[in-house]
Amino acid sequence: MLDLSYFQNQNSNVQGFFSGGTWQTWIKPRGAKLVTIICQGSGAGGGGGRQSASTPRAGGGGGGSGATARLIIDARLLPDILYILPGIGGAGGLGGTTATSGSSGQNSFVTLIPDTSSVSNVVLRSGTTPAAGGPAGTTANTANAAGETISVITNNIFSNLGIFTFQAGVIGGIGGVTNGQGLVTIINFTINSGGGGGTGISGTVAAAGVFPGVASTPVNTNGQNGNILYKPTLMLYGGRGGGGSSAASTNGGNAGNGAPGCGGGGGGASTNTGVNAGNGGRGGDGFVIITTSL
Image: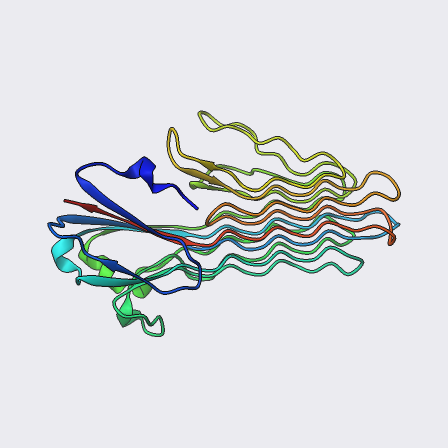
């Protein structure tokens, strides 16, 4: 969960909503002037790695991340109560001789009443199509799992009353027959999940500017959970893929879970049917952060 103490100051009220799948309420603070809402969709689960004595065999692909919708609006244009529904992160797929894909993520919502069935109720929706689960490992490199697609104003009609920006989620890393794929390009504050290794290491995150990198997962090793960076600005990392199996009788690594809004990593492949391939990591739940200037 994000630590909101990093964002508090005496002239603002910051509230975070993180429990995926649970309706929560925001009550407008007394003296509210300007309200900023960040609505982040949930990440998808990573795919499980393939378990096979023959090659090629691939690790699972990392899950896509959630999209982000932001709104800055005059507090007088909002009701006294808003209802918040963060999306639930997708479950990771299972590794095995018939590996399974990760589950999709979900949209997150800010609404006028606790109901998402009509756009007339929606103040802000994270995106359109939820993030796709990471593909299961097979006999070839996996595809990239899609991030949550960008939101559209027709699904956020009350955003016309303020200043809004919509941004799509990022793709998941490819599960490889040798090494998994990691970071593609930093295009959002959610960073790609890593694909699982086939016979080699998982995908890495290369350092970029002020943002630190994350080392690859070695063979036969579990991937680390996605970390949260607060300074110099908020950055959220997807789960790292599991390392592949490089020798007989060794397991593929399980993947790490994604940070809030990010995809889970892909599980590592294993060498034969007598050992386990790695499971995919869980996608991080979506969240909503509402900052009120007083």
